[in-house]
Image 1 (spheres, rainbow, N blue to C red):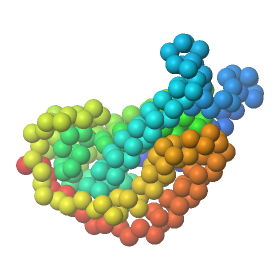
Image 2: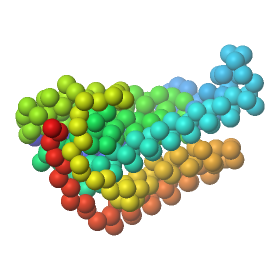
Image 3: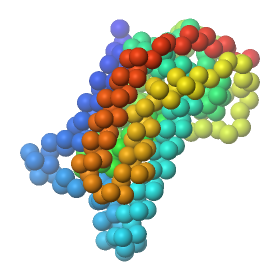
Length: 247
């Protein structure tokens, strides 16, 4: 088992270890590095100190920006999950029976990783500023390892068709115009919504609960959403889907 396969198998554990460390930010207490001021408040304060906006304006600007980033993350996650199938999304092993080249996968190879980074960036607004920096760097490094591992795996499984796909579709920055023809497979939107409860909950928390300025309430909302997402994924029936190779 290579490092990419091992990291993929334990990706959820690694991801949550990074996020929990970001929220905990133990270096604040241990070495007095940084403060426990949430990133949302810190960004508003620094924008005010820089003389760009008043604090009463800067705070709503940060909230709206965070909500937009979270919405982008939700959109990408739903779109990607609908076409890939939640059974593949949550599987503990890499799947390579065939190549998905429909929906968002005609424009970007990794919409799920891109979407995840967006909603995690929005979630980081609730972390201490230094914890948010740690989480964003950690998630970026984890994503790179996972993406490279999946690419290596799919090259070995699918061969030249996948190599051609690599040359046609960008890794992370979507291309609006594409030469990849759709294969005709169908999305599973209902399953996608149920499997992406957590990103949706993060969006709701940032977009609506942020206006209460109650940090504890927002943290509780995220925890409740996380628990609900675990229940939904456990109860979600698998979708058998065999995407075709791109023509």
